Structure formats: structure tokens, C-alpha cells
Picture 1 (cartoon, rainbow, N blue to C red):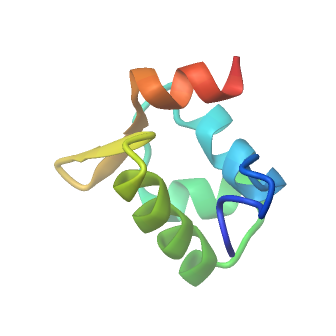
Picture 2: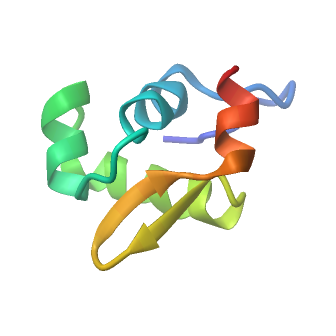
Length: 72
């Protein structure tokens, strides 16, 4: 699951993850909510964390200010 398309926009899966992260959630919760396999969610979370769009706090992920800018 590539989070960023060749034109620099976010993939639909990445957008879906960001939208559910307005409240902190575990990867397992995200997987259930967006109906994607856990391995794909974890991969996307790594990419989104590297891009500073999400942050992990005590095993849960939450959208950052940068992530909010991207989806607004």
C-alpha cells in the first residue's frame, strides 16, 4: 500500500486512515474500521509516520497537524 501516489497526492487508503485517526486508535482498530488487512495498515502507518502525518503514542496512532492539513 503506497501512501503517496506518483503525482504527490495521497492514496485513498491513506486518506481513509487519516480520517479515522482524529481519535487515537491501534492498528487493529484501524484495520477493522477501514476493512483492510492489518499488514497493509501497518505498512501505511509506517509511511504516514515517516511523512509526519501521524504519530504513535503508547501503541496508538493519531493524526498530526501535518496530516490534518493534507485532508482538509
